[in-house]
Length: 173
Image (tube, rainbow, N blue to C red; front, side, top):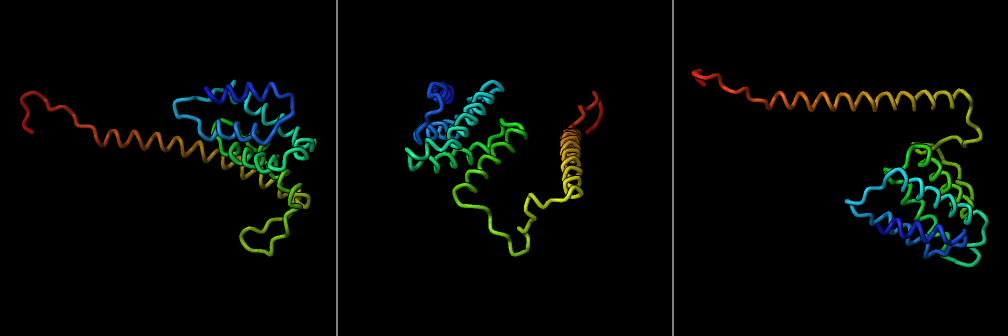
């Protein structure tokens, strides 16, 4: 699998990456053939590689040598945050790295002028709001489970609706 080859190459780099290395990893994930399955071991290798790249980016040594490193780093993280094989914790970590990189490059977000997208800055979040968010996330998980149960039930109903009982011998149709 091309992805394993790229991960092996990144592992040998020892933290000295170029934009080309990030591009290759991004390409390997983005163009992953449907027949290739990313198992748990490979997922961990990809996440470890991302962590190593993040540390290299944070040190700043790569961005000084390579002007397009930042753009390939952001593109890589943007691709990775959308991958189904990462768990919620890994996904949130990737999103945090992406946010930090963008904030470092472009500065903090400008305050919203109100409306739909307006949100309080993270440092001003009250404990009550944090508790409410936790409660809503828990409720969201419970609802996801309920939706899955209802989907299975719906499939069973459709099965029985389509079911045609065999005619008894000698009975008229």
